[in-house]
Length: 288
Image (cartoon, rainbow, N blue to C red; front, side, top):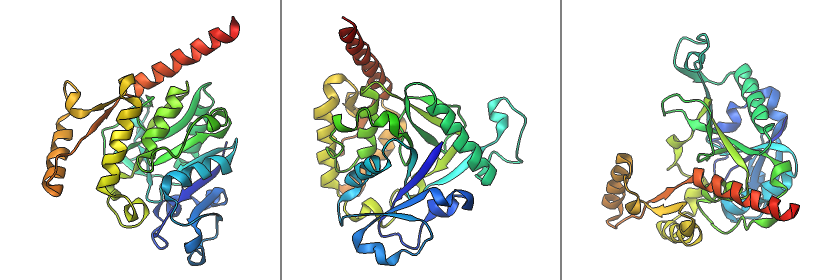
């Protein structure tokens, strides 16, 4: 079962969207992760984990991994809103009079049950949510998870000391996905229980307080340096058929910054296959 729900937050004392969407019956699971400099501002009736000042989200997330230990837990951005899609999209009778709704208390319970069931699969280490603005879909395997991670701490404990979780001071969600997949674990992303997250990507507070364009460029290059040779991270311009949405984004960014932008293409499916091959190779070495 999901024992804890961590919500790292910074400079959003009065704007705790994710916390407000968690049913009261589950509030005892919540741990707000806040910096020392802000602890006097928080009055919510939940548990707190206090971290050092100005350490950034990457380091904060590593602290969460280690604090949670072998529990099953959520690590949720503070602006996430959960939705449930109509059951008619999944071969069942309609259970609402619209395409989706914000999760009510029962929906939230059903969502946690679904997450637990997915984690019961042998090598599923993390579960996430499809963005609510996308068309309905079922569960996708080993695709990019961001914003809301449900993590099996028992499985993560097997690799936690094998990974430098602080290697990328931004884009840490990309690194997390690659690291767990390359270590032979799988992820699942739910479509029925989706989330709104992208709507708040440029809001004040959080990572926007320290993230810069220079940082982004630096980490883009670091990602290429680390994983381009595996053919799982590429410059978008090196992909045969980049999506139309990428070119629209690139055009907007170039107009905004007056500079050429470098977009990246990620192949998480291939990362999983590499992880499985490494796992099998290690097993064969062990058996001989």
